[in-house]
Image 1 (cartoon, rainbow, N blue to C red):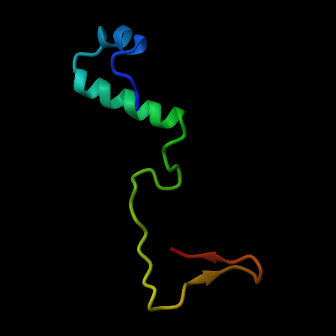
Image 2 (image 1 turned 90 degrees about the horizontal axis):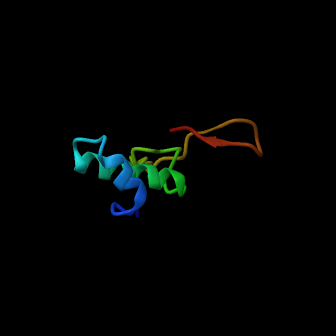
Length: 68
């Protein structure tokens, strides 16, 4: 997690009127820099697949993709 008491925070906070928003932005930046963001699904939405039905597979044999 980003250190809100670090040097970068101290430098930037003088230019940022909303400390809560600044802390959030720094935490999000830290996640991106440390590769903690799921770039394929950045909002964290869960893809729900109905397992009672066959998977909708597309593509040539040996190279199939699940269509969502």
